[in-house]
Image (cartoon, rainbow over all chains, first blue to last red; front, side, top):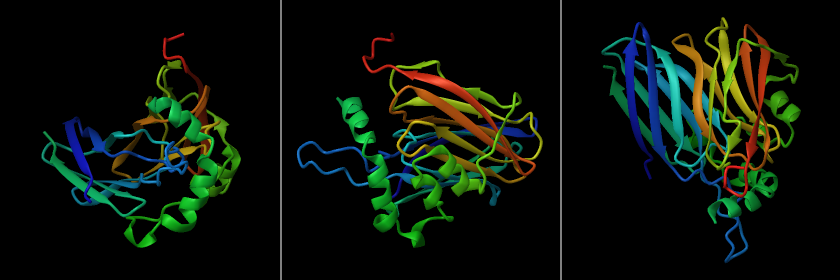
Length: 103
Length: 155
């Protein structure tokens, strides 16, 4: 299943603030299902990458304690017209990607 | 209701995280290596050792850690860490000291990125949020207490 990402970013003076919202339950594997008495299976994004024009700028690792529907706010050195890509992958193998051209 | 089950659930995170690391994680599908050891650690020092190989960090005033003094909903606590004043920032980690697995997330920066991270994290109870910044090969930290109100009436 692919993970949905919404991204926006704006460049100013060589620095671009990129914001993204990812649609994901971020189930840590600790929350109990009261009906069955068993925990909901872990399903969370654990690897996040930010690329600028195809070159890796940020490499992030997440645990299950990042909130559901995660927000990502980062700053990269990029100018207007540069392409910023966000790649994510979850512990059960779901992947998602989105890119924007900076305005 | 959701929060209640979350709070209950956090108590069992430790054991569950170990189970996850043992079985469910499929290395072939992740983009980069995921640091199992650090994320499964139940103590702050263990997590730091697993991530950086050391647990000594110096408190630094150059790190700006923005977190709410009171979080009415512990499941969505906005955290912003700005270490762009520091030179050569290599990595930023967020640690929730009393969470069952304290390490929340870790960001590694290449030359094309600034030492800035903004995210939202889950917190089980009132505790300190610690920002760990690795710059020039050394670890620096900044701490702030976040009160998590259970009643949800802002008090």
